[in-house]
Length: 254
Image: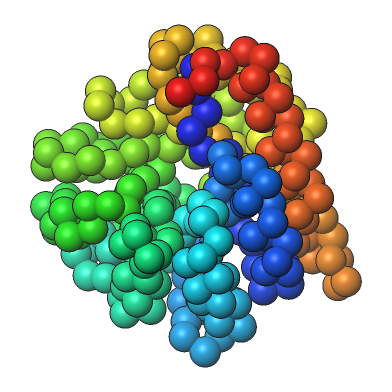
């Protein structure tokens, strides 16, 4: 199999922007994702201002950036509305007219998932942004929603993600391709220490010529000054390096 993206999730305003840019330039397969939810990611808030600065820096430093949308923002998107705080970032483009934020993950699993899911309205958003790849979390509880979206004839990807960023290894919930013609990725407890073992396992689930991606969050964090765990670029680099080494040894080169 081929690893298209090695996603590192939940970088924040404590991270040095140059470190993120340098990692992205050093490892083109790496993708860096911000977690977006109103209490911490609204205009003028430190995390939003920090990410806005990173996005503008990435206009001339071609690295892979993503946005993972949660809570009220997630609900708005599933109702067919794009909050302005998200739209203005999605619209930022490089000189070649490609969006700086290449993928948007809508976290429909976990937390309060009792919101309405309007597949037709979501499909309209996907059609409005044809050069952004949209991702939806997959879990058995979301199967009916995903199948409704699948009937809308729009492109989207699916991520096995029962852990929801909590760092709990959940590969017993992983399976093969979820929907034909919709890329499948894997998350749940991935770390620098176990990424090789888990790539070996994922490789048994997919066709030899399949392109997938992996996403780590909780295990890429170390205790910060107040003992709160924060995104650690050193751990992220170990995770990226080991995934790339696996790819060079075992995967096919797309």
